[in-house]
Image (cartoon, rainbow, N blue to C red; front, top):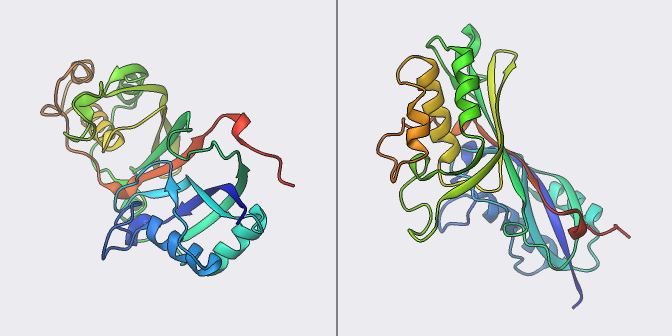
Length: 258
């Protein structure tokens, strides 16, 4: 049977998921999308994600690759999936891709956003589960300086869960952009890199918030970028404020939709 390669762009509320990756006896994003595809295609279709979001982490632009029978156009696949997926997952776009496309290994960058609520309404139940409510005063200038320090090609072993990559891996990530932005009700940290290590964004945010609230020195960040382990890092912030925002691929992997 002839098949075609598609990229799915997914949005999901991670609250009721045990993360992205399929797990036995756990509800996961990969699992529910594969169940929906099997219902539509009559056989198991493997869904390969650009990255594995943890339990509680949300997505505004997770990317995934699938190979489906050729009869499924990108628009028809999107419409059919959205008709059968649960309400906390949504396919925002589908693209026809070259057979060489691989959702994980073809990616040239990934971008995350972490939301921090700083106003009096940050404890509102309708914002709970969507952002971190932060009650301590923050030095905005120190936040900006801390973000600037992590831009570039660095070893992030000090900002990652031990064992997140093989010991033979250099744990280097090239951070293209890291910036704190003001938003209504608080702040947003935006970071874009070629790769991320396990809990890396959450460790970075926790450490920067500690710096900006006077709990540690900003000079700790360069030291952590030289560290051989994560013993000196601040605790990671909770997953519910984190969003996988966008995954980018080379233009040549996109096909014209016939």
